[in-house]
Image (cartoon, rainbow, N blue to C red):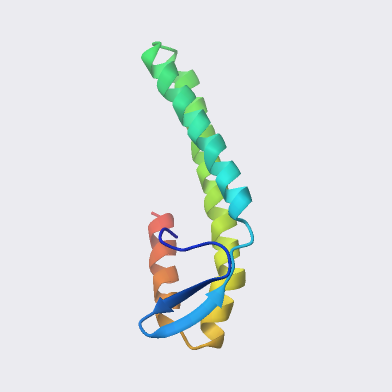
Length: 106
């Protein structure tokens, strides 16, 4: 969702414009900050030569935090951006969502 402003921003997708707002921006930013903190801690663990199983457990926590962030963004996108895109006939937004979901599921 890079390049999107997250508060009542107008977007243009192939000459189709719509206005929407992302209601979960603060939640997403908080989740990302926590994930970054966990990842930094994992890097420190590796630098300090910590046990591999401890590192793997912490990496699993990082992955879980990122997946949770993806879920919040996806729900918000569906509830606001996609609902609005459908109402104005913006099929490109649906195609972009499909591509993003395919990448998330890999």
